[in-house]
Length: 535
Image (cartoon, rainbow, N blue to C red; front, side, top):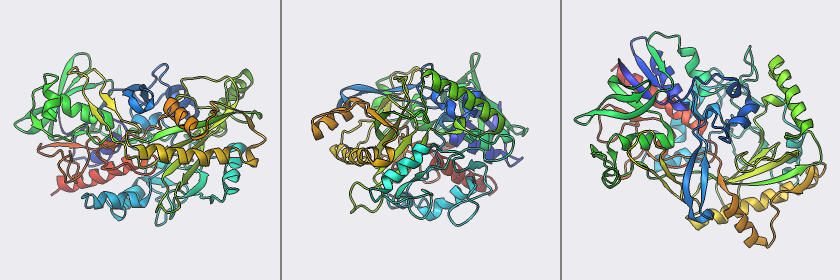
């Protein structure tokens, strides 16, 4: 098989790239996805995220693990990643957050000219079909359905009231003129038509409508082994599906395999730091020191309580019956508890009022979330997460061995910079004040993991329980410095016909969830590529 473009990975970026490139009938596109079709019930029903995120069993989830983290009591962290068309947008909480406008201007200041806020905003608008309607900061005609939550729980409103009582302002649009405050998240969810209430993954938004095109071929359950090279030019890929197969690219190969998958694929293909490749017996085709470096992620800590009231989500018999009834309601009209993202309430706060933007993010969840739902509690409850938005700790992704079927070696190096622990502790103190405030009294039961010993006790609990909130970026970073892997058009430096387009190209982690920015990146690069195609 031969196509103009071969895309590796059908996640958030890959779905956008396949759709936008194949919109031109003169362009032929092949998309290879290692996971499944991305249309099953557990993906479409938002509440069924709870069945996927834990990775037990691994439903639509790569369920990756980190190496032991020295600053987290040598625990191996858990890294859920989507394994289906739509990628992690098929298993996430559907939260639509772009990050702070200043984050993108900092990208430009780091040398990524053309990636400042004014440059990227048009691509956020292009992607967005928001119920707010079209104005200077929102789009209404894009394929990605963005909606207000239909029915947030009463406890979520009580959380907002508790924060407001502490002089934290209400904010109903975290993608608006200001980010700071507390309020409801908007979600990537179908808001009208026969699919109302369903998850709007990147695949549902972009890819599925495009799959009827004759110039787009989508192959699922296809595990890519390596990129094929000829004298510094990417010519295609080799993949497993009922045996080893080859697909050729007349113009370009585009890796959309994600923050862990893209550097892993480059290294397996002989592109990366020479010492890393040689240590695993891989021929060095192109030395590129930065491949796998610059890993950044949001480290998260959770404060959880049992609930005295039953109008939250639990796993006791009464709660399970309510879930069953809610599932029937969702089937009927797309509303009710089954439409919830669970993380209904948001907060973007400054731990130091001298800062120019929020440095911690809150996710208020109408359920107990303990160890990525891998520890089950059979009582009703609720939680609030807090994460450090701009961590100074930086890790890396490497190889475990030369086997293409092996998972990558993931080392976030959480809390390796002590500043992150200081910020996280300050964020937790704010959360504790909110969670103990009067508006939440009717729900407040026993606190899980209550600690003693003041600051030392909190630090010990962070080291014992903190982990990712699923926003890894940066391992094929864009830029102009020596560790940059891709240039400002996301072309791999020193290799013709090869790009990386996904969250791995972010030079620095944004202050928020990373799905919407990943979609923006793909929109921007796809537009550039189509312009080049017709030059």
